[in-house]
Length: 242
Image (tube, rainbow, N blue to C red; front, top):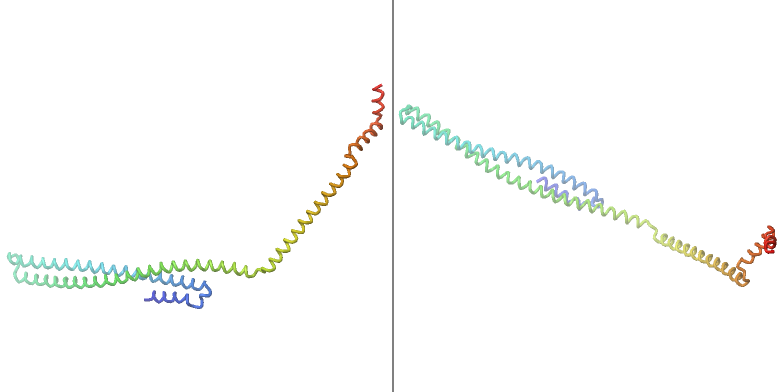
């Protein structure tokens, strides 16, 4: 069948040289699924038509059997009327014969309709099997397509990351990092040495002041005496004490 040929073509896609470019198998699979769905629509339409023919044949057979029975009953009634002398025997025989002839015709038609019904039901069963197989195949390939798309997404992302990593100059990056570490270490050592120098300077000044016994208060006292002399405060204090 056509859909089996399409399945074979879809299967060939993975073995084709286009496998190296993962977009091609995806497009081929999507096209194959579109074809399968189109075949499924046609198969469903055909199945519905064949089932309708089977139903029509069944109804025709039942109708013909009822008509055959009706003509048989009419033939009986005609003969009974002749027996009761309500109808001429010759006329009754003619009409009864005609009724039985039509009975036979309807019985033959009912037989043919029943045979047609059997054939149509067999065809419908075969079509229904094909429809179920198509549905199963479409479901399977839908799952395969989702898996394939996921694999493409992962492989594309992995490829991009690997390309970026491959383009990095690992040795240059390591060298740059080592230089930065060395520069930072140098700056830290320099800052620490300046701190030590500043601390040493403050310590020496403190030692000198301590040795001289000068903490700055003596100079302040001398400055205060000079200021008071300039203002005459000392003189006033002296007259007050007297």
